[in-house]
Image 1: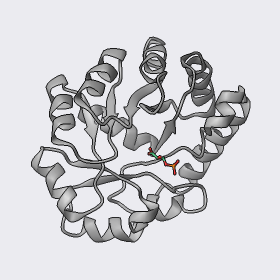
Image 2: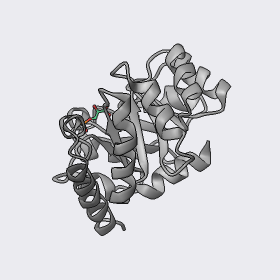
Image 3: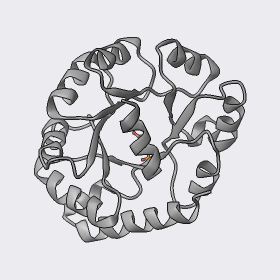
Length: 212
Ligand code: 3PG
């Protein structure tokens, strides 16, 4: 579990993907690899999610694939069965976290308040998704939470993009930043994978420049 979180932290970016068709998963994975960011959080916002995760996992490990928008224990089971290596949830649900822990799979629940961070800590977690980052105080809120919760690492997501990435990646408490800006749903759906590859490469270059 720690190894997966360390790999996410090493990449510093987590592309948040919405796939309308599972058949788009392979070409998207190719674009992520070609762009230098072999990571995908495939969200359970479409019926294609589990099949898409399976298609990426079946490639044999070239892309670190996880499931996002996991809000029920049943989705935890579905995601893990499909091959998800980590699970991301918009909020902190004890049922979701405990089911993930039963599977021995890393889980990142959403937490944006001190109470929510404490709830995650009580569940044995040290890394949380800070969602929705932009409307929850942004980088200033993370810096404030990091003072009392010095061991906690945050993955801000929601409203993050090239224009404010620097504010988040500058914080030692930020493990990685999530976002959909480098994998726009409409571009994937339209088959513009070269455009996606280019956005991914730009995001990687920016994150590399911002590396402390
Ligand atoms: C998520 O599920 O993590 C967010 O919806 C992604 O937010 P963004 O589209 O603003 O990057």
